[in-house]
Length: 109
Image (tube, rainbow, N blue to C red; front, side, top):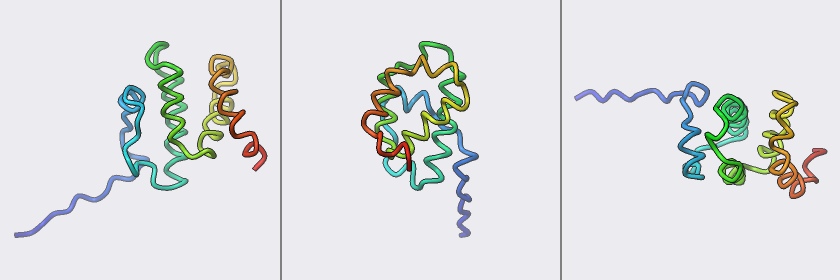
């Protein structure tokens, strides 16, 4: 009997169920298994939250998801959010200031 192994689909080609992650507030264990994958996740998360209709997620849900990321990925999230849509930053201000107060030492690294 010949066993056919499925090739692993690169992270960049995978569909990410952001709606499920936001609803559950959890990322699967080992989901972000490296800095590059975490950066790609953040890039796609920024585009997701800017694309879905208002009310599709709450700031508490987004905060819970962001708390599971590495602190550098959290800072990167807000950096990309600001670069992608500078006008929307005011909508995320409470979340932004909450995270930045915790990680002010990472802002200059």
